[in-house]
Length: 221
Ligand SMILES: CC(C)(COP(=O)(O)OP(=O)(O)OC[C@H]1O[C@@H](n2cnc3c(N)ncnc32)[C@H](O)[C@@H]1OP(=O)(O)O)[C@@H](O)C(=O)NCCC(=O)NCCS
Image (cartoon, rainbow, N blue to C red; front, side, top):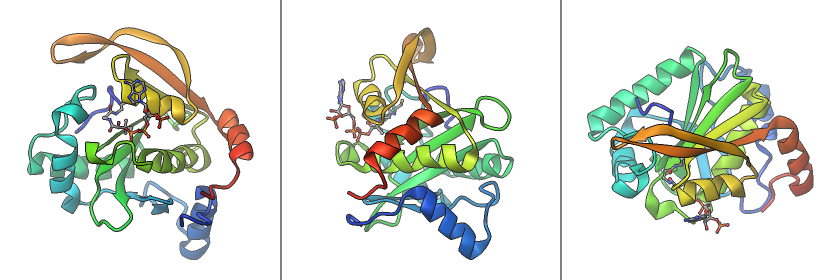
């Protein structure tokens, strides 16, 4: 995340099944043209809209959210430019950004991003941020499982990396919880507020994820 630019309670279907169902009905197989809408037990993930800008500003441009990530925009217009940029980068096939919309709401309260670290996304990096009023609610893990499924099943990633500042307790705790493996410490690898911070490198491999999924099974909460 740090390196990334900021420019049914019952019977929730496995995200792969949702994606396959969408393909069957719309013929849409190409995420570069449009992101699918992914529905979890608590949140929906969808493409960002320009109308999400005020909500994202209120949610993400706070000290506690932005403390360990690349500085987010500081104005609605800045977020609108960021959102337009996410659409261009998705269309170019370089990057994916899902907005996180809790059930019962219309606007995004956070984002999940995936960017390619090599052409074709074989190795990719993900990152995430949500408004602090949604921390600890289960929204993160609900969205995270769908994003990781999407990366492995649709985008074609086999190794998904994440970087979290060592001092970012919640960021590291969230990655551990989702099943990522800590591979090492990237010393003084992230410049934030004029200071170089150490980061933890976390990875998930497609084969490990599929093995774990076969244990926790289809996502029925
Ligand atoms: C990262 C983020 C999306 C995670 O969402 P969240 O709702 O806070 O995550 P969760 O509460 O589901 O999981 C965090 C875990 O870390 C644990 N945790 C919290 N503070 C911690 C700390 N100081 N040290 C270790 N673990 C900690 C939590 O207890 C929780 O684990 P648990 O559910 O087993 O108790 C959210 O915290 C956020 O937006 N942070 C700001 C942006 C950011 O730092 N992004 C990450 C960049 S890698």
